[in-house]
Amino acid sequence: MDARDLRELLDAVAAGRTAPSVAVSRIGQATADLGFARVDRHRGLRTGFPEVVFGPGKSEEEIETLTRTILSHSPRILLTRLTSAQAEAARRAAPDLRWHPRGRVATLDREPRPATGRVGILAAGTSDFGVAEEALLTASALGAHVETCFDVGVAGLHRLAAAMDLIRGANALVVVAGMEGALPSVVAGLTDRPVIAVPTSVGYGASFSGLAALLGMLNSCAAGVTVVNIDNGFGAGFAAATINRQSVGGGVS
Image 1 (cartoon, rainbow, N blue to C red):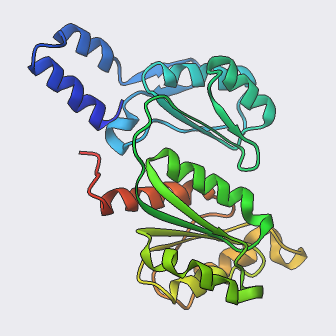
Image 2 (spheres, rainbow, N blue to C red):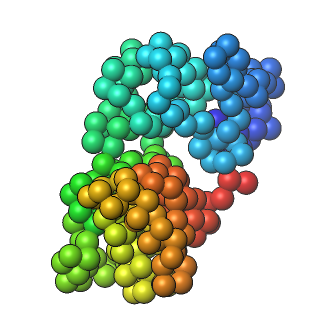
């Protein structure tokens, strides 16, 4: 349940179409205690999206139970960093769940709504596509209209020309790069839109599994670059979708 769902439910109670006891039952408890986890049933009311499941460290049985529990009170779910075995476990609870192996993300929306606004996602190279897809699927799950432009790294800077409309017209931009992590600085110098930089663990030895890209982005000469953690496509996609939602007047309240 999110804020829109709650408003519709309360309107139905006010109009006499739904009994108050039914509304109380639908709203339910704030948390569901599963023993190994306490699922936040009201996350969507506060933040606009239900609790997201992070796969690492969880057993297949726990993933299945979490999927079933969240879908018992929400029409949509997002699971990140899943293994293929965990994805199959989630599908036992929801056969209509969609699994995206490259981004290691599973998604489901049983009450889809029109995508709004415009979020741009740019990736420097093919090796960055997995992280970029995680950002794409996250932002899309949160209701953003997402456009992408991939393989536009600084080794062939002229390729960015094809993305200029997106760079200057999106409400928020996610820019994913490994190696030296230079692409976000270039993009931020071309637009007045928020740029969320995502360093990836792609690169040779001196890249230190993404640390070089992270430090390069943190030291960006271009103003307005915000940086998330190494390989954190989820965090960048969520932030971009939140900015986008505010830009189109779709806040939680």
